[in-house]
Image (tube, rainbow, N blue to C red; front, side):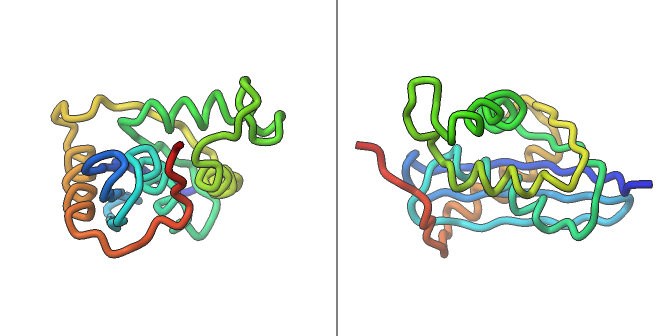
Length: 155
């Protein structure tokens, strides 16, 4: 029987682009682990993706996961858009490169060994774990220590 794990995630960016951070909570039974990091220059969407990636990459075996995010970008991207992006060689319907492709590919790889259900939660609506992830993400964004080497400014 697969372990049943809950993951809660959030990303934050002061500016967008600007300093950003992510926060994630991984819960298995009564055990809980938190993750956060801040980046000097990034975007909100990249931090939303990183929160999910880091939590998923921390799992060491096949799991049944419910992942809660307040990001429609992440939820729709991974449940709907990614299938066609992959078919088109990581291009959009307009034949343009997919934004944040480095992180989408990493998220796709992190999911491959798990059964996952994606849940959307409304941000800033009093959801306790989402609020905690938001606090972790904002605190990390205010004290960034890392470079987001995959971030590519538009233009």
